Image 1 (cartoon, rainbow, N blue to C red):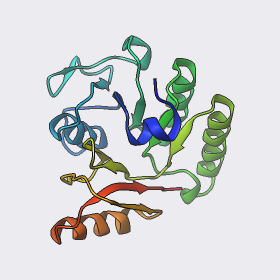
Image 2 (spheres, one colour; image 1 turned 45 degrees about the horizontal axis):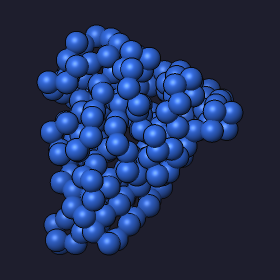
Image 3 (cartoon, rainbow, N blue to C red; image 1 turned 60 degrees about the vertical axis):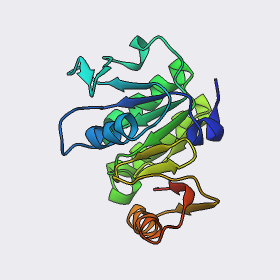
Length: 189
C-alpha cells in the first residue's frame, strides 16, 4: 500500500466518509467526481445511512471495508473529522483530505480542533490535506477529489493554492483556455 503524499496524489483506492446520493452535500459532489468522473480505482463510499451510493456498496464504517484504502476523503463536519483521523490511524490509512471548515479560521473552539487534528496526524504519521480545503486533482489518473465539477486532463503544470476559490478559478480558466494542469492542490489551513 502506498503512503503519504504519493498515495494522496496517486491513490490506488479511495474511501469517502460521508458519501451520499443526496444532491447539495459535499459527500455527493465528491462521489460524483470520483465514481462518474473516471477515477480508475475502487471507490468505497462510507455512510451508515445508505446501502449504496451511485451503484457502489456503501459501508457503515472504515473498519467494514476489509480492503486496503490508499486515500480517505472526509466529507463530514469538523468534530467528526477528528474521529475520522483517529480511524485512519487505527486502520493504516495514512493520507486524508479534511474538507471541513470551522477549524482555526473560525477561531475559538475551531483552533482547539485544529490543534487536536495536528496532534493526531503527528502521532499516527498521517499526511492530511486541509482542513478547510477544496481538495486536489491529478489529471493523469484521472482523479478529481474536489467538490468542483471539473473535467481533468493530464498536463505538465502543477498548482498549489491556499485559497480554494482562487485555485478553482485558476483551474477553470486554464480549462477554458485549453491549458492542461496535471495537478492542483488546495492547501486550506
